[in-house]
Image (cartoon, rainbow, N blue to C red):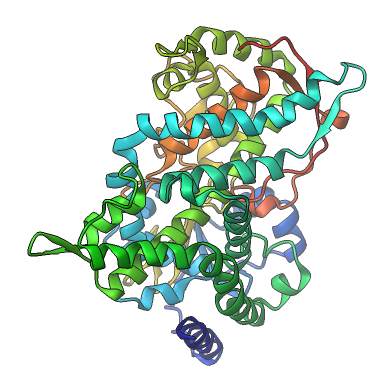
Amino acid sequence: MVLTIYAAAMALIVILSVWWKPRALPKDHPPIIDIPAEEMFRNPRRAYESALNEHGPIIAVYRKGRLEFIVNEQFTTEVLTNDSVFSFESGTLTVLNLHPLLLLPRSFIRDIDKLVNEGLVPLMNQIIQQITPIFERNIRVLTDKAQSATSKDPAPVDLAGLVHRTMAESMLTIIFGEAYTTLADIRAAEKIASDIAVLSGIYQNIGYWSRTFPTSWRVITWIRIMAFSIPWNFIRVIGFRVWKDLRSCTKTGSTGHLRKETLLHYLVRRYSYKDAHAVRLTLLDSLWILGLTLGLLFASIHQTAAVIVWVVFELAVRPESIPILRAELQDVLEVDEHSGKLVLTNASLKNAERLDSFIREVMRTKGDTLSTIRLTLRDVTLGGYTIPKGQLVCPLATLSHRNPAYHGEDAEEFVSDRWVGQSKPAVMVSPTYWPFGLGRFACPGRALAVAEIKLAVFFLIGRAFPVLEGNKYEVVDPLNITSVPPVGRLLLQPAPPVF
């Protein structure tokens, strides 16, 4: 009931924003460029780069009912790192249709960031040990099909569906523990991650209604997901059990019933207060913990799964790289001291430099355009123009990632070993490479994401050769390559098992 009232209130805010008179632009604002929708959504790189070359270095463009200010590469560092002027939190929540979260008394983004940096990153070795068996078991479902196939008649597989399930099970384990990884839990986590992806506009470019009537689409989507989907898929299946665990902390004064290696245990310790040496949680803190775990589920499941598909598809169309990476897999495998089996650990994954280079090159070249955005906190002068307070500002990613001045004359080419020996792992961001963002709020979970990508790839190519039918894939949404994976028919051919 409370959630329904909250959702209705948030929807009302969105509706009222339709009639809210926007502040008039200053006379010295950047030029507003009319980019036809067809050109914007079909070939955004050419559309935005041409507009910036002709009218830049800063332009304003209407997209999905919002005015956005696009900057070229010379202002990337200023926009993405000057937090006193350009807000990551306000910009990200606004562009993801989650701006009502800005009304909360606490900072949702900052608390998620702190949760990952303080609760997850220090436990990376342990976390990789926890989730490696999940990746091995699930990927084996695909590779077993390949073992019964032939090189002339490879086995078709659903990679996207499997990696979503794998990520859901892995993140449920990391956040709540193995008790929360039943089939119903995994399906609920998958569904809620998918629905929040819809709510946040990740697929908004694809649909006619969502693209043409963005405001009404946002209102109806907010009501549908906040009032119905979240209560049914998250609270009913997972949330009630988490709530009971949280309230038990107050009743018993102890966290003994929680797995100490989970993020839920970290959250309870962080938000609780001690009363006569007993652990206590307020009702509001318990609700806040539920919200943070929900947000982390969405952010970690959908985005990493999408990148795994990108990496595997790029590998499938570059078969010459597969033997090299299989050889590296043999080199980095470790022997488990207890079982004597060959295993992958966090250390061995870090040592996989060639796969790391391949992943970094995929992230650099896959075509991200408007991937990272900020919102101005005050009027700001930039490039001789004035951008008023409350406006979305976004650097064009291709001007950094495909720039010959940064990456050499072959910047347009995919060079799988480009970063080998360069001491620039896939997680390292800079003004010339920022698929994980840049500055204070660069993705805090990128080390885990890259490790998960490596697990998926190694377990796949360790027993199979991936190929794409027709040796090609389709980019479904060129304007949102960051979050929407490519589509293609993936086939697996049998390969001698590496381990």
